[in-house]
Image (tube, rainbow, N blue to C red; front, top):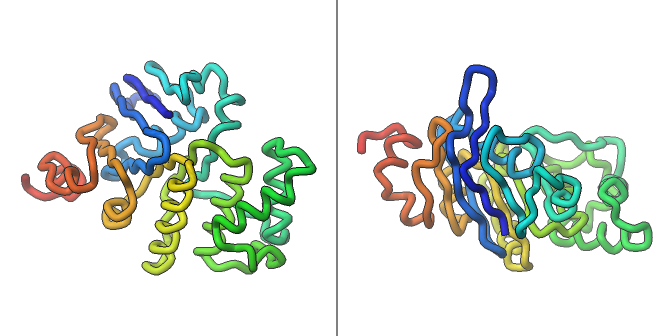
Length: 234
């Protein structure tokens, strides 16, 4: 599915990613975690072909995404931490517009809108304006927009931020349904509890370096993770 190999990314005077490698399997949920400034969002943007690394490569089913970003974007959906919605449009209009922008043929758009809304459990909100939705429903609409073209890979930056506990649980269930339906998910998340209950695999960054990778159970007891992410003495 997605393969990240020896990724290096530099900002002026600062190395944000230093020789990071990992891979994502089909039909899985992988979480990127780590302290603030660890390089998680930069890594996600590199995986979304939005930032080009200084060195290394990212491939999606064998395709180098930075050599062919348009082709890669047809197979992935991306939702940044800070996103905007057209508040004066209805949910149906938002999804229809997004489908058109992503090249979904006109004859298929209504069905894609219905499917995306159904997956995110907002079918009953299709006639509501986006600006009238709660924080949790806005998040579901944003994810529905990101999957309207039925991507193989979904990239999410802090999808649970600002959500109440029950909203997080509902979101986790919806992401599991996407995985079980054949989609792979890569997400950045600060809420360790949310990640441990959701992810199949966890990648931990600190100061731009991968310090651990494994199942949630293995990560929980990893002394390097405890020291770096939780600030505890290992």
